[in-house]
Length: 419
Image 1 (cartoon, one colour):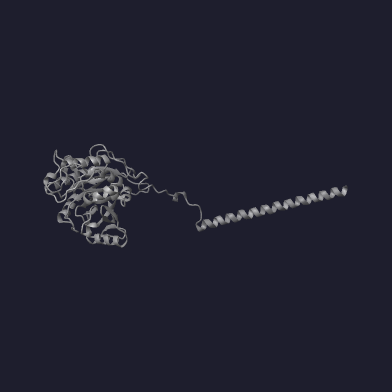
Image 2 (cartoon, rainbow, N blue to C red):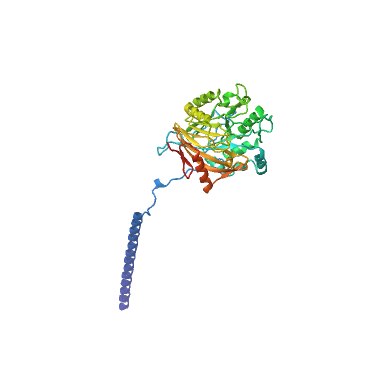
């Protein structure tokens, strides 16, 4: 009995020693693992595998159209009144500078002549009034403000103008398609706005107002025709005006109590200049949409240059022209950009290939009225502009560079002055 108890005591001592040795080995192994992990983490940090600094994690703001077709970055302006002016929208980014100390920038997009009558009307009646904008609506909706030149009265009524070779009109449904595409403002100062007389012009106003598309260059009287549309984006207040130097006769002039268009001929160009000066008192940036020049000519006429200089001298910061049905060049005057013609956009096709070339003109402008331009080459199919890419797009940009005055255009379409 005594030996048996001694043996059991010895065995228990041995078991305790064995367990202690296991604990010591376990602790040693755990310590080695922890040391190795620490060394690995330190080395990873030296290599660049450390966790990113939270200050380097940025979230890009949402851009482009939302799921319902409305760009989340665009403000909805007050639609009260006949043209919706008088109710400036709130700035999306108020203040003179952003958090990085940079001056705010507003993104603008311009397109040329839109004509939805004739053969184009047959296309849109078959494929829908949204069809012309299929390939461009992304660019238009992504901009803070998009502007085009509407060359078709929107009416089912009206009296056709006499002694004109081409007289147009199309359904008021086109107004909603223009709005859906992302175009905010259309210029009506051109040689087709009154193809259906004063009644057709008033119908056009009504259709655009219903679709909440603003218009410039025409009105129920001369005061409205020469008044700017004023909108604010990114904390930058902009005044947009439209003038035409191409109409069939003086009956199209807007008068004291007479609907019509804002012209800029001898005798009325002073009124245009005065309108620009007044607009400059109300806005940071003044944009003029000009309808002028000679059809199918690559270069601006002398009077286009003179008017452009008059506009800039009066306070215009950016001038975008149309009417020649072809692209004309760019020029700077007193550091202000002039695009003499951005060509057709939604249009029919004719036998002259250069009338098929067009562009989407983009501008980024600051509150101090400095603008940078970029052209996106496009090709006008029947009633639908499509992107012109690759070698053909490069050729078009080189062509526009060749007809511009002291201007270079790089492979991305960015436009710079050589002077």
